[in-house]
Length: 163
Length: 410
Image (cartoon, rainbow over all chains, first blue to last red; front, side):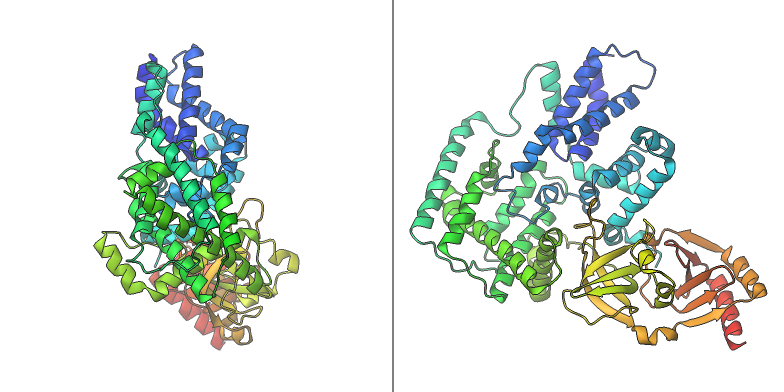
């Protein structure tokens, strides 16, 4: 598969996925760029699982990024125009959807199961494998994530309320 | 597409520009700058220089410390700034107007609260805040881009906007000090969220009509505030201005728990220390209703962070807890209840709103149940010690009600 074709087919999805981890567009681009270069150099043998393979690579690379010095440095470099909003300014800036923004505000521990289960639409078993957790722990984390989202869910998705 | 996926797609916005940059980098070995045409770089360097000079000058010649007017209509430059700040990274898509307006209102709310608490600042404090601002890096000249997007000239920035932003920032910090002073129990994590909440509430309470007119004029959709749906539960502990709240728990159930159990609720049950900012008198065992502003301050490491809430109302004081009718079912009644409970929908409690005090508590030989009645006359049932609830259908609810009444009279 040619690089151009891979970019056409998968880059949008991978960029979004990396963004949900890094919460930074430039960082997401860097992550996906590294993933695609590595993928292209790896002589991957097509087994009909390119998307799953790239997804896993992107998740791992995004998590590496979150542990990196580059990320920590960015965290320290607040900019004057960022300081002009509320304490959650970084996330506020990303807030085009109240619920989406609330999901991005969750700690990674709770954000990640939401991304994998709801965004990637992976079954619980696969999420548990990827995160190296038990299925029950994944279920608990999903519950806790929804719990933390509760006020936003109720405000936005009133149709889901029973009354 | 599920709702979470849709929400995440919305928040990520349009990725086409990122995709194009990626293509350029990988296929054409080009790496265009993210936003800025090269000819603007000298402009922004000049702008930065001018900004520093202008602001230093203002500091040195004794800045006018009069507060900015917080009228919604009069601060157009501030509004333009907040809108552009949201619009620039994401373009026209999404709700940049609503978010920008919300940030604008927060800023005005901070100024209003500063007036209310008669806060002032001196030149030294202004200079200190300015020094902090000038240390922040802005490698992509986003600040300059925002000004261009908002059509704000350098002169306007130097003379109007920048002093206002510094002023808002000073007052934000001063308000935090007010909260620390006012409330014996407060922490760093909650104090910022509390400032934001108070600023928003102040504007809503005092400028509702102006906000509505402004939103109409600028075609801004009315905002949905976090935590605008009430929840109910018991006060399990009180400590000065905070209390420990456990959702969907009655005083009777609370009484069955040890102190250790009270503070170690199941993971999926909402139990948290809550701010009592308006000092509504509450005591242990009170069944209360409140609006909960949780997600801004819940934290991975501090599970017992103080949550911000509003509109606390005591639905049933502890001394009247016995108004919840308690009944003990013998085996035959227990069996009948179990049959009726087959005809129910199991609901995750986050999708079930309970606005009233419990109506009944039913004890059987092995379990106790708290029962509420919703506005549709359906029973909502929760076994003691659990967090999720069962919502019974209308007919089953009526039958259970008859069964309970019959056993009460026995």
